Length: 31
Image (cartoon, rainbow, N blue to C red; front, side):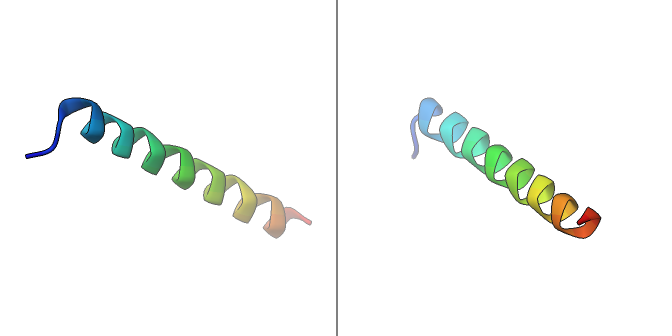
């Protein structure tokens, strides 16, 4: 069983990666 902070860290990292990829893809589409 994972520790709570591990789960929170994975969720935060996943959200950051998702937002970064989304932002990059939007910037590429605009340019």
